[in-house]
Length: 132
Image 1: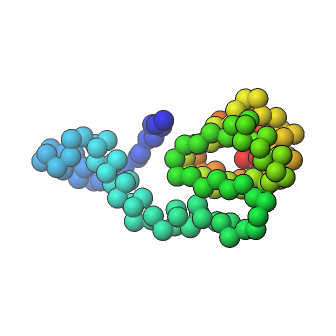
Image 2: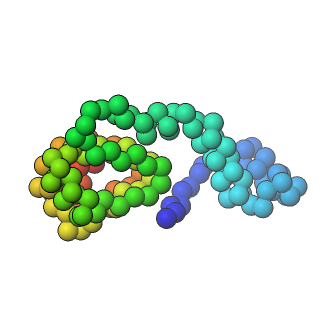
C-alpha cells in the first residue's frame, strides 16, 4: 500500500537534488526523496517505538495491538475479545483495516483506546466508535 505525496522545494534545494541525480548518486528526484525520508525516519526510530509501546504495561483484560505496518481487525477477533470481556488498545503507524461486518456497537463495548497514525479503513460509524 503506497501513497503519493508532493514536496515543495525552493529552486536552490531542487538544484542541489538535480545536481546529485545528474552526478549519478541517485537515480531520480524521487529516489533521493525516498532515501532522505528513510534516513530521517531511522533517526527518529526511538520516538516511533515510544508511541507504539504506549500502554504496554496495562493490566490484564486488554487486547493490545502494536503495529508498524498494516493490520486487520477481524470479526472473529472482536467476538473473542467480547467473549473474554477484554478492552481494545491499539497503537498503529500505518493502516488499520476493520472488517465490514463489525458493528459500531461491538466496538463501543470494547471501550477502545485507539491511536492510528496513517489510515483507518472502516465504516464511518465504526471509525467514530474507535475514536478516529
